[in-house]
Length: 384
Ligand SMILES: [Cu+2]
Image (tube, rainbow, N blue to C red; front, side, top):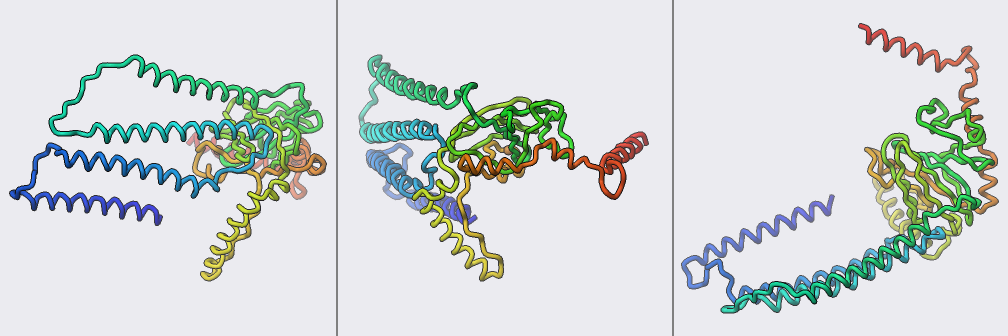
């Protein structure tokens, strides 16, 4: 809100300044000063030097931004392929940086050099094949190199060897939450379809499929360190995007189809929390929180809890009103802890059985009879 006000004030100041110069110009009417609309040599010189002023502004702002905001970027990748993604990203940044540094200097210098001068005429210059070849071929070669490296990285990251021993997990997206389905001992997910969604079977698993008998549905994602996790994504309603920034992984979740992404985590949550950059980052966040808490307590409100780092699965596709809050905690365990965590989880089949068990007070499935009554009521209203 404050920044918005600052922007409005700046815009108003600029408008006021512009109006003031206009008034000043009007007061000069009739005096000896040149009031023609044609730029004089003096005007052109001023504009030429302003070009250098703007160039300096671009560079100073770039360097300022690098120092001010670079600590905010994601640091060490937590997956095996993450270094490859970061490398591709860094090469792209460096290339953009060099090219922009050179082209901006040339652009502004030539604008200055060929500024208007009295009695100087522009030269008619049709084309120069050599020059055009140079400035077409160099970017083409550089871009081709970048694209080839990108394709190499992409195929490397996206290739999943079907023979490889992976942990198969389904990520199920719906407005506005995530669920994870573990494939159980057989490591094969049972068939699923939205038409099977009913009561406790919230992700629409075909419970008659033999592969679905050991499937487990949870709302907190645990994955083992050092083992390739093969994610299969589904969406119930609209386009979502499963985004796991620390693992450098993202894949769209599309209704009606299954998309995939696989990666190997290389740090457990506990190990990642201990990395020096993370310790420093968390300390900084908690200093800010402590300050905010003192203000809150002074106002009689409750203080904020201290922050601890956790990996997150976020939705990265604007999918509706609560999109911003569509997230699930990811915990990377040691393989032993992971096994222990998974061992006491009830399978979906058991959960559905428990949910459908007859209610102790009334006989039969109370829920079903209510819904039948509802349907009948709706039908009656419709007939009227
Ligand atoms: Cu979403």
